[in-house]
Image (cartoon, rainbow, N blue to C red):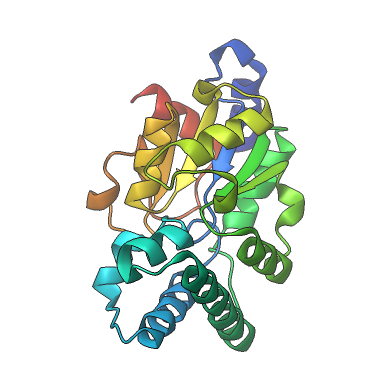
Amino acid sequence: MKESFLIKSILKKEDEMDFKGVIFDMDGTLIETTEADFLAWKRVFADYHKQLAFEDYFPLIGMKSAMVVKTRLSLDEEETKKALAQKMKYFSEIVTEKGIQVVPYAIKFLKQLKEEHLKIALATSSRQEKMKLVLQLTNLTPYFDIIVTGDLVHKSKPAPDIFLKAAEKLQLKPGECVVIEDAANGVKAAKNAGMKCVAITTTHTEELLKQADIVIDSYEHLDLQKIYLGLKNN
């Protein structure tokens, strides 16, 4: 029996479906931005005579930029604005020079979700300016019904705010949403929101993502049938 037939058979049984919407993180989950983001932060830290090693950058993934500046550089409000502007400038220069790639097979999976008429959201801790740049360079905007950025919520991941806001905008209950994440803080945020979570090991190891309901290495062989069955078994 073909996979497409299996998927459609499952989707026809609406009463058996546990989810109606899929919420994607952006950096690392859909877009390969980890290196560019790290290099941009490294330059910002250097501006304030501080070093940033990659292992120290890891815990910052999924954190709002303003919170990074506040907790790691201890800047006042005015200086924070300057640092954030520099961060965006550095990031823009890096991705313009080196380009930016979509995570392999992510578009294939997004197309499948669209074909099955599931609601799709992008929920990124990045600010709107960065989100617009990234989506412009990757042409991913048409896949999303709604987009929520970090500057629209008060608390960073692992707080659930950004995913709850996305569910609200999709007009879905938290339990009707599945989150796709690549970072430990994002997985925690999804679980704190009362949502199921699929984690992809593009950034973190499977061990660090073990709180997720399903952990995958790639979108290549991922389909709705596998997600559905995986979630039913968790």
